[in-house]
Image (tube, rainbow, N blue to C red; front, side):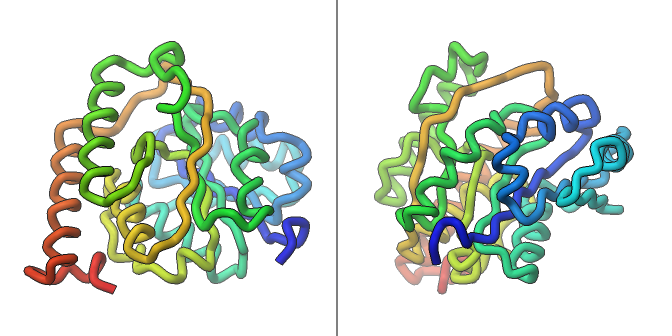
Length: 253
């Protein structure tokens, strides 16, 4: 399928992002707005006015392909992604871009992240902060060091050579998503690592591309210690499944 014929959707997960959501939507390049079939916001039971802001934005801007959804119950970061990817598969989309609603990732990079799909060079692409200068972009030192350490461990465990595993700026080929049991992954933040493990098991092509780093006033909802422990646990489960010592369905396919 040629690049011009790809059915592309942009998925924007939000949680308490009332202040930043309009900025994110405004910054999506005009050519991308015209190219994609749908831009949909999935508000994960925010406690602020994120959903109302989204609805108001659509009404004022008259965006033809913008849809705003609200989950009555919080699904979790991973759970929200599961909902979105199933939605895209059901809709028959070819590509889904995940763009966070907190303005941490630059919407202007979407055309760059889509290029490998148009050239049929990747099944999944993510924007890597670690290939640039993340500290100059405001990444806290403890997060930088934690990212480096976890990534080293993950590369050793999975036999990959990625610069990081923890960027939330991701693009998936929906055909690739249908080949892996992503619905069995965590509903938490380590969903991002578990789905990379699944892509590795399925020998699907993972490509990373440099993106700028931005840390603003947005609140981080990740407990770094718990997050790290969950990742180490997932890697342990992967190895137990690989060696057939104990079967974990999410890593045994």
